[in-house]
Image (tube, rainbow, N blue to C red; front, side, top):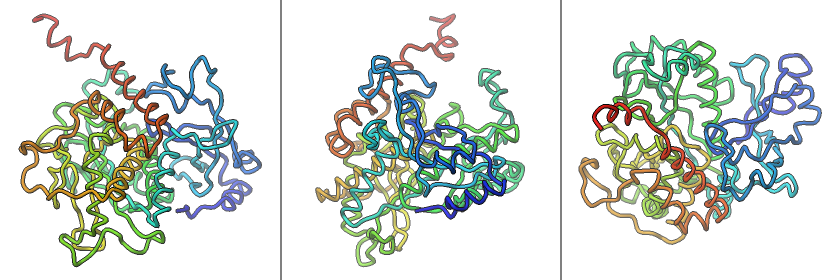
Amino acid sequence: MSTSYTFDDLKKDVAEGRIDTVLACQVDMQGRLMGKRFQAEFFVESAWKETHSCNYLQATDLEMETVSGYKSTSWEKGYGDYTMKPDLATLRRIPWLEGTALVLCDVLDHHTHEEVAHSPRAILKKQIRRLEAMGMKAFMASELEFFLFDQSYDSARESGYRNLHLASGYNEDYHIFQTTKEEDVMRAIRKGLQGADIPVENSKGEASAGQEEINVRYADALTMADRHTIIKNGCKEIAWSKGKAITFLAKWNYNAAGSSSHIHQSLWSADGKTPLFFDKEQEHGMTPLMKHYVAGLLTHASEITYFLAPYINSYKRFVAGTFAPTKAIWSTDNRTAGYRLCGAETKGIRIECRVGGSDLNPYLAFAALIAAGLDGIENKLELEAPFVGDAYGAREVREIPRTLRDAAVALNRSEMLRAAFGDDVIDHYTRAAEWEQEEYDRRITDWEVARGFERA
């Protein structure tokens, strides 16, 4: 799906002085925008064809550490270049930055010009091609939650992230009065995203003090992943411009709710007109195809969890009674289950994955979900009966992995993901998970010191 802003529009804006900067961005393993700020005249002259970046951008951690153990790149290999190929279908104005446009780039091998298999956009595009070969198209929507703070990023960092000032002092789930107080930031986010060709549906207060949610329109999987990434970057930039801070950390505080990225998904015909999950004659309106797809999600739930929860902190969110799931089961319109059937008996029928946190990379998460669902379809997996009741208290049912360590083992052992993504890709992300665990294991936390300094 293309944006409404074309390369011809950009050339006109550059010629008439409205745009002077073009951001050419690739998406890294963490789902962040990485790239260059081009003088607009140079971009429209030649850089729209390609530019280059260091290949370490697809092999670092959150702190941009040059992590050892990757097959694709290393100090021994010299950290060479990748080619960044702008996808002009993603070109858009960025209203909250003066005179600025943005384009997302595919990451290509510098020598062969083939897509770099472990780059997030390439991973998702590979699964989309599998769907296309079967005459299907995935539509998705990711609900993004985050916390808003009445202080800057610099102030938060200088305080050691202690005594942070939330934008509200109480649970603001659906509150209009409290969100009115935050409207200076949230209105700017809604208007800014809308102006960047991202169709916003709404924002709302969420289930903890200072917690917000932004929702945008359902779209095909690649378009939605592109939007998701730009939304996160845009929310941070807009908040920063107003002296505020936003965090997409999955669990920023023990006493606060976690922040999720629920992913709604359904399959449609290749032209996007016929819902393949809906049959009014079937129970709940679910087609056999949908049942097989959901069975695939559940069968491979542990294997795909890493792509829904990629950090140590991600697993702190899975706490009973907090609207974050702990069980990888499905249920009908039940927010205690990891997978919730929404829109039953209607054309809008879909399955909502509630496992993912706001820290996930959307390309990787969407790709993993599609791969699991396709395996269910290809192998005609049978869907278990829906769970009824409070899933938090359920016994002897499928659980979400409790730690990154467990999720990394399931990822590494996944024959389904190795077949879908390729061995090198799974080895690459298994190494990323191992590194995250290694870094955590050797750190001393404030909790350990406070607990044992005197009493140990």
